[in-house]
Image (cartoon, rainbow, N blue to C red; front, top):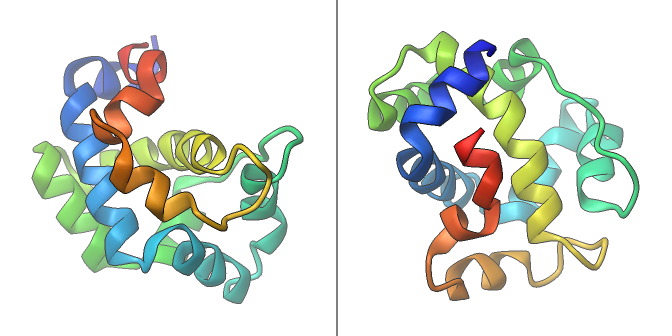
Length: 130
């Protein structure tokens, strides 16, 4: 069981709530995709939005795109270190963006997130319980 599995196993709902807050703080899915594109990672985030396989992202790339502040906030909400938060986000973001964009486009993804009864936690389901 890897670090990501250990972190998510104990923090499922907190991770989903923290991720939802992080997404909203970045301007939603469309704002986040713009940030990734501006940092030369448009192909990576495009794979999460699109209908094909998701490309991986490293914790270092997460740090470069999001910056210290949002990662530290996410870490604080989960009670983990910023390093663990970056590792967690490198696994959560591709899955979350992929599930929020089932049609292969970011249009409407933020509305979908807001309308889910259980929020992002229900959407990510088993991924958070690994």
